[in-house]
Image (cartoon, rainbow, N blue to C red; front, side, top):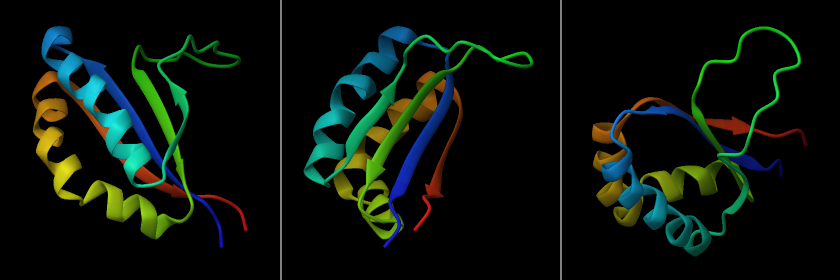
Length: 97
């Protein structure tokens, strides 16, 4: 079964408020079997113009596990913080089998 990836790309508009989201999510992801592969970091553009955004990639055992994490009560409780303190998007990607 292919892995599932929860990918975040956001521009933080309220760093103080975003901090509550940033510190809460790692425990929620690990409780759902997620492994943070990339969190913030210093992207090095190799081609093109890279917009200034925070990027996070979390690996789960399956796409279904990503959905279970995302729709969990724990994540849904902190999701409004991300929505209020940043602009951007999150998405699910499925790895190769």
